[in-house]
Length: 389
Image (cartoon, rainbow, N blue to C red; front, side, top):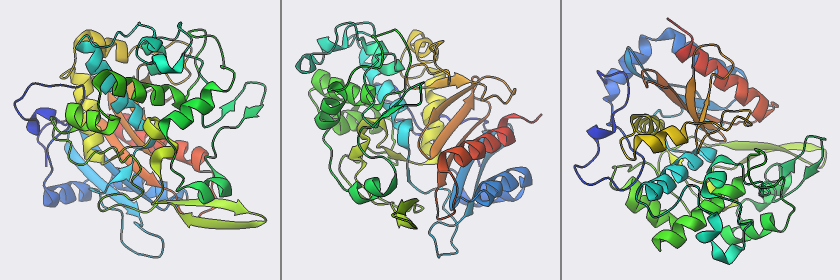
C-alpha cells in the first residue's frame, strides 16, 4: 500500500524529457490493498450503496491521509457472481477530454499552438468562424453544434447521431470518421456566436483531435501514445480508434432500452467508440485516472501558468468547466474539488491533492435512469471521501 496520500507520477516515469502534459503512478500491492479494504467499512458501505441503487457493478480507488484503498461491489457480468476487478479496464467516456486538453496544452507550452489563436489557423480545411479560438474549443465556448444533439432552454431538441435507445444499440458498431462528425455539426446552426456563451459540445474536442493531427503530422492515437502515454508509462491507458473490444480484464456494461413495447437489455461492452471519438473514446483504469489528475495538479508536465488556465472555470459554465477539467464543490459544501467526468467514470481530487478518488460504474438491467441515479451515486462516493474529518 502507498505510504503517501496521493499518487505520484515520478514513481513510474522514465527520467526523460517530458513531451506532454499528463502522468501516471505506481502499482499497489494487492494483499495490502485488500487489507486496507477490510479496514474501511465506511467506504465499503458506500460502494455497496451504488449497487443498491440498481447498477450492475462499481470499482473505486481512494487516496487520502490513510493511504490507498480499493474496493468493488456488484458483479463483473450479469449472471456471474464475480465482482468487478479493482484493476479492471473500462471506457472513460468524456474523461477523454482531459487527456486531449493536456495534449493540446503540451503543444501550447512548446509554442506550436496558440491558446488564443484562431482555431482555423490550424484547421484551414474546415473554414471555421475565425473568431473561434483554441481556448474556446477547449472550454466549450465556441458555440459549435454538438454532434450528439443539442438541448435548448425552451425545451426543444435538435438531434445528432443516435446516442441512446434501440437506434444506438442497433448502430453501435457503425464506424464514424471524425470528419463525418464534424461535417454533421458544421451543417447545423451554431448555438451562439463564438465566445458569447457556454454549452458542452463533443464537436469541440473532435476538432481538437484534427488540430493535433495537423500540427504534429501524426494520427491522433499515435500522437497521444508517443507524446503522453509511452513517455509517462501509461501502459493501461489507450486510444482505441475503431477497436470494438476492451483489451484486457473488464466489467461488462449493459444498456436497457425500449424495443416497441418491450424492454430489452443488451451487453454493449463491445462497441465502436468512434461515435464519440475524442469526445469520449479512451480506455483506462482507476489507478491511471487518479495519477493523471494528480500530475496535472502538480504542474509536472507543463508550466504553472497553463495549469492556472486549465483550472480557471468559465463563469457561465454550471459545472465550473475550465480547459478539460471542472472546478466546483459539487454542492457538497466540503471544499473546492477538481474533476474529470466520463460517461460512467469519474475522478475527483482536492486542489492540494491530499484526497482523491476514481471510480467506474457499470449499468445493468435494472429499470433506473442511468444519468439521474449515476449522479446521485457519484455524489455519495464523493461525500464518503471528502466530507469527513
